[in-house]
Image 1 (cartoon, helix red, strand yellow):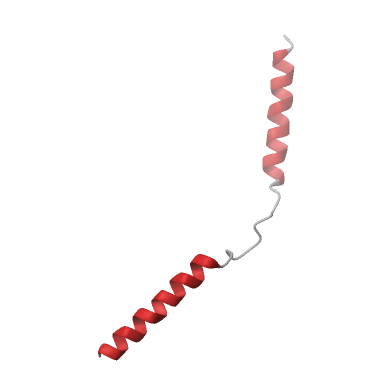
Image 2 (image 1 turned 180 degrees about the vertical axis):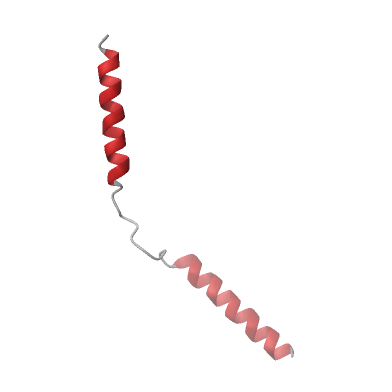
Length: 52
């Protein structure tokens, strides 16, 4: 029983270290086009109101 608990603790520790030091799944350098479009529209709206 003690051997099982030690083995389980080692597996959990390795999984924790592996998840901490590896890159997350998926693409991290994705450009958010919707955010860019919304920022551009807000900037344009702000530019129109600042000239009044």
